[in-house]
Length: 222
Image 1 (tube, one colour):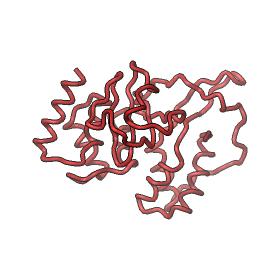
Image 2: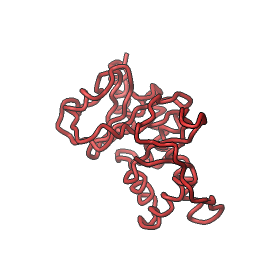
Image 3: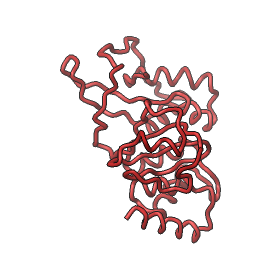
């Protein structure tokens, strides 16, 4: 069925006279929503026809489709040829390589980059909202972030926080330590800063606000 969907997506891409639409195809294949809906969602996030998209746009599109991208931080220094040994056949992944993204659905790379030597920047497991990843990294401790941070209500900082909220939604994961629930998400600071800079924010200011936003949401970075 996934191969059939891939063929359908390719036909729709030709019909739309598209190029540089790897994010549209990956969104369609990872979520099952189809090329046409994925194309519309990416357009809503600012993608231009026959143009690529930056990370903030495609992460927001996945969020709008009802899916969370969980960054697999332990999968590094691989290529499209070698990454399959690290992925589980029962799961769905979005693989972010150099200037490209590809869908890996239940052990099959549904993309032209299959078996290529394209260097991988990040791997994300694709999960519907409400479904837990079920994996709490061993490095996470019960220690909470102590500084008290207030959420900005107006201005550029407030806009920046709202953008981070939409792009990196926080999951609630059960934590056995101290028998309570703890907010936890692992985000790639580089990806977050690239997204903010791509939306017109100065990188140094964005870095400071990103740190405050992470503390406010009790997000821990490994």
